[in-house]
Image (cartoon, one colour):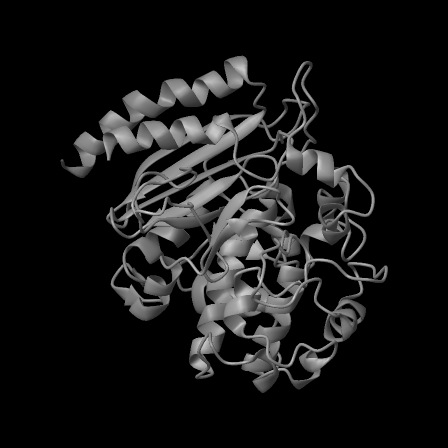
Length: 390
């Protein structure tokens, strides 16, 4: 199927579902981008940047994507480790000696990147805006379980851990700056972890999700709402920026939060994953190595997640769909039907992934959030329809 024919079929199949999100599901502003074999084959956008309706959502509209940032941050960290000559099985202390506090001397990069290091929650209250204090707390923190024995999603600490690793590996570059230097600028991506002031006017306003009448809370939302649970402690470690309106503030958008502070367009996220789906090459230029891309399709940990309260699978910093014991039957399809697919969702509904097996990538971003950290029907119906076409 040629690109033009594929684009037409995708338009016919996905546009009605995209428009249904606005007509029936309360979507405010959103965009979707799909790449196949390194070329964009679908770009849809609709709605407005905020509830005033004054400005239409365009293909290049920027929006905070919460934890969809983590996939970008993970690849950036893996690149820094690779350039420093460090494999995933090396101990973190070989690069970051002070990390050994709290009995963490044997923790590997593989464990840290796969959310099995037990560092999702801090014992003390540390403000998220004070990065040196957060790093000091992480250096002293005793893991909540013996590293490698369980899995607990590092919702907020993950970005601080990866940023510190990148700074040690690059002798001072923040993860956000290293990403722009090595990936963002060479690919001309509209995506930043630490947004320049010059781009603030292009950013859509986020709105919080609400509980729908008659909707039963999930095990995750129950644990999230119960003081003292690992889930609740994880999402306030470090403390601050817990309200959606906090992420709309210019000063927040301009700070580098690699766990949850990425700002970009659907097109940029889809292009990023398209590069990975093409084996690390973009427009004839190698961005990351083939071996780095291969590592993303390998599940490191698949188990009931102690923070997300459901079965989760992780590669090195990216999510994977969990599979049955036969190794081929997917138990969940956040990232489509491909067994090599990987990606990361963001709280409220954003979703981005790449599938090297099909040379395919997908991104959906929006500003009207829904409750939950995993994708909802707004994007998953689109992914299912995509699977039927490509």
